[in-house]
Amino acid sequence: MKLYNLKDHQQQVSFGQAVRQGLGRNQGLFFPAELPFFEDVDSLLEQDFVTRSTAILSAFIGDELAQETVAQMVGNAFQFPAPIATVKEGIYALELFHGPTLAFKDFGGRFMAQSLAAVSESDGKITILTATSGDTGAAVAHAFYGMDNIKVVILYPKGKISPLQEKLFCTLGKNITTVAVNGTFDDCQALVKQAFDDAELREEVGLNSANSINISRLMAQICYYFEAVSQMPKAQRESLVVSVPSGNFGNLTAGLLAKAIGLPVKRFIAATNVNDTVPRYLQTGEWSPAPTVATLSNAMDVSQPNNWPRIEELCQEKGWGLDTLGYGAVTDEQTAETLREMEQDGYLCEPHGAIAYRLLSEQLGEGETGLFLCTAHPAKFKEVVDDILGCDIALPGPLAKHNALPLLSLERDNDFDQLKAVLRDVQ
Image (cartoon, rainbow, N blue to C red; front, top):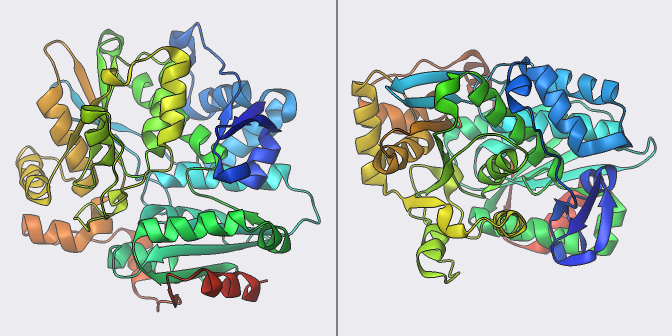
């Protein structure tokens, strides 16, 4: 598999190099030089989740890793289901919260851990550095927890993720270091980029990123779009509209890649909260990020989404106009209203899924089938959901266990020198 740097097309790397490096020169994202295409999608959709995902990921990776190795990686990573649930007639929820940290990022985080183990040089030093607006941190921390020779440092905005999200990954210890940064998620993301731009530091601690900028995480996410469609009646597949709750836009990138390699999706909707850089861009053609605003859907509180260049590259390559993307931004008041409506219809959701559902309901046309992504278990946002719905959500096992443990996070300012000191201290 060859990938090129979106900011420097002369830089081409293998899958293994892309996984180990995370980012290319000038903070460029890696993108596949060639995309596979599955002509007989119906046969592919008849396979089980692990078998199908092995075929998809092997087609991307090529002969760089043996198919048996990829099968083992997928089997180790995807040990939980991605079921769909009927919310209303013709509208389905893809539930991506049945993994160990109750969020969609378990798929990408666990496959990345398997990928890194498969392509790493045995004596190499590896430090995973990543920023999280909520769910990435837990998925990455649990995926790499206890792995030999791999240190993990996770930055998150202090006070801007839910307490239960924080407990799920800031209570582990061992090879996992968590840092509460006095700033926003965008500040955390900027610190990560700054670290990767420091060649000396990158070499010294063996830096790698586990954000959705890492191609292995993105590739893993392609697979659950196929899994969702496989569970739908065949008659509904060709009219499918998919609404994706979007913050850093990795999930939408993966969905568009699924369509590019043959999955029958009619169109996508980019669903955001009031951090609406992309909806405004699609409406006006002007890219003008505003300061990040804290919302009920905190994992989407991103005003400078890192993955957007991949979406533009893919659309250009496939000849898809950006005007074919649906879009919309939802306020906190509308989010709360939608959660109450969904509960009345018998479906318990959380803010991110509710945003995707609302825009899907508003934009779904006659004869179309709707799918929206539920990216986290409602209990991960217990305080918010309980308050809006007047309920008391029971904590699933993983949350109850970690909620009882003390926080182990360091607190640091939005300061690169402080981050460098942390990275050196954990070695």
